Image (cartoon, rainbow, N blue to C red):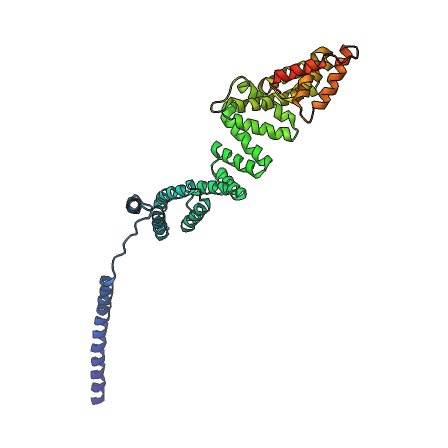
Length: 353
């Protein structure tokens, strides 16, 4: 009995202890959680770097750089440092790039295109996604005669946003590079966009390439259109003497085609336009003489042969003299008397001493 009572008393003590433990454990846990919650700082939402607020703030900082850094190189360096420190601020980076580009433009105007390229590459290293300076980079490569790099950049720009201006730039690059096929591809786009009146220099260059390739089917229509527009007038800003050479070239190509096709009256008409603009064109005088001779106008052929002879060119002068002698003899029963006077008159007409 005594032993039972001892066990019962022990049991009651354990029960009381367990009850206290059961009461206090959840209470202590809740307190710890409360303390933990109170100790954690609240999470702040990040302001998007391209938000209007951040753009205003960043652009003000960039404006401050421009205002305080009066030395162009120091301004460029400060802008580059800002861009490097804010790689996610794409809107503000574009804003900074415009100011940075002003400095690069000044370097290019000073003729230091290698330095300009180095500056552009540093900016692109800090902001690879920004394309503000790419067109300037193409120009700098062009100025340093790195046609391959200039063309590479130009092709990418054109693929992203085709325009007549870019087509014109690429045509110029490929013309300098000696790539006639690529030049023709872009030059024809330019001509189609601006028309013959504004694009006459492009049309002339395209036609010249076709002439060199002996592709007269493509050259002649262009030259004909060009002379329809500017055969009787001079383009604005062009010296008449220079344009006369162009007209002589264009009419000469057209005349040679007519002569090759045995259209003798048309050939004479066109060659006479050549000598109107280039009076000492040896070949024009020679082929006028040939066309008249083949057209049974032997007397009419004497004067042009005499003029082709006195011009003294390497191609047709001697041939013209041989033909002149033959025709003169035929017209004067084998007598050469009087021919010297014809030759003297030809020199006087052409202003040859």
